[in-house]
Length: 247
Ligand SMILES: [Zn+2]
Image 1 (cartoon, protein in one colour):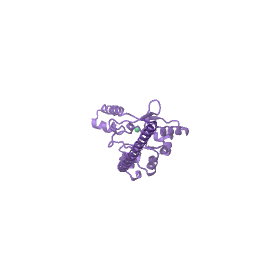
Image 2 (tube, protein in one colour):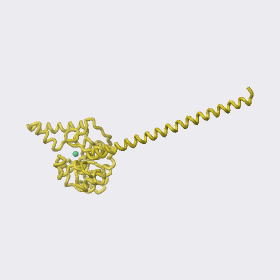
Image 3 (cartoon, rainbow, N blue to C red):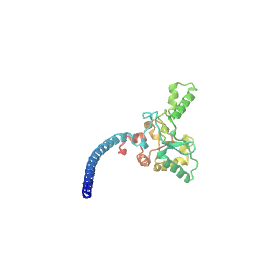
């Protein structure tokens, strides 16, 4: 074969290869744009669904982890798990809310109020079971009925899974007694806790709604935005998650 012929064949082959590559590229681009359109349609659909679900669930307070309602009617599932972080050597709190808690404890001490400490924070459902049973046994020793013992126990200790301590967003201060309301720490918390996202969970004027007796020592994290709204409108969590303030 002549040299000139060889060159012509090579050139033709090159042109063919380039043309094939260009065609392939065009096909891929078209496919991608079809895929993008499909994805967009799916995204819009998902967003619409999510908005619908959110507005439905937000009303009951189940969507936003900060205002998850835990009480007798709304127990946590037995397998409930939460990522925890240490407050100190022994006590733990929900990792997502540890910073505001630590900041609050730091700032309260900065005000010269040093006689304040976290007595109890996160408690596992198993631990709660233990605590609950111990209290029942204590009352049973006085010779009262099981039913009576449960009633007395549940005035202060929630059934396992129905305690906010199982959720990891509640703390009890100091001696866990009513005397706490006469401390400087309590006054400071009343004034400032909402700025850090904390609320007094079981106040005196809401006993009938919460179903729990007044607990000046028990504070719950709900996030700053919710805490300030609740304080401003004097709503307990049960009222708040069912109110229009949420939307
Ligand atoms: Zn408590």
